[in-house]
Length: 229
Image 1: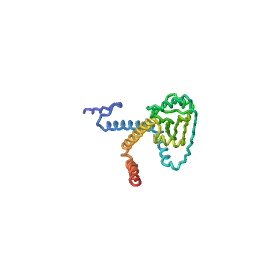
Image 2: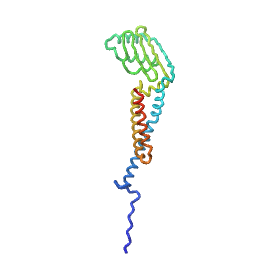
Image 3: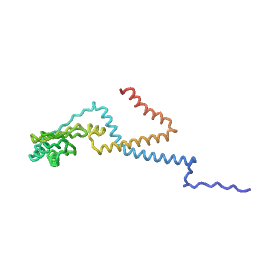
Image 4: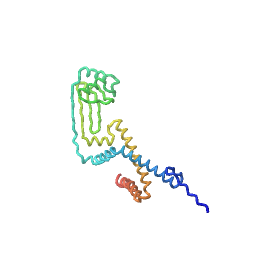
C-alpha cells in the first residue's frame, strides 16, 4: 500500500491569489487601510478649521444676542506742503480718477498715521482723496483733505467675535485666506467621503449605520421644506 503524499503548504509570506476568498479579503483589507489613512490625514488637516467654523456658526446664528460695542479710533495729521501740492497736481490731471496714491504719499501715511495702505485705487477729486479700507471685524477709511492739507484716518473695531465671524464668511480677508478656505473645504469633502466609505465597509456588522446616515440626510431636508419659505 502506497503512502499518501502530504499536501504542500503555502509559504507564510506568499501572496493570496486574486479571485480566491483569501485574495478578496486581502484586497478589502488594503482598501480599508488606505481609507483609514486618508480619513485621519484629512481629519488632522481640517480639525482646527472645522472647530473654528462650527463655533463661529453658533456665534453667527445668535449674532443678535451677542452684544458688541464698536471701538472707534480717529487720527488726524497735517500733511507736508510739498506733498499737498503734489497731490493737487495729480488730482487736477485727467487720469487721476481711480488711480493709486503716489509712493511718497503712501510712505508718509505709513509713518505719520501708522497705517499700512494696501495697493488699490483711491477715489480722487480736486477737494479730497478717499480710500475705503475694509477689514475683518471692523472697518476703516482714510481721507486726504487737499484744501485743508490734513489727513484723517478712522478705524472701527467691533471685537474678536466679529473678527472670527468675518473669517467664517471670508469678508475682507484677502487672497491667502480664500486659498485656505478652498483647501479646508477639499479636506472636509475628503474626510466626509472616506468616512462614508468606511461606514459602508462596516455596515454589514452594524445595522444602525444606514438608518443613522439616513436620519442625518432627511432631517435638514425636512426642516428646509417645512420651515424655510
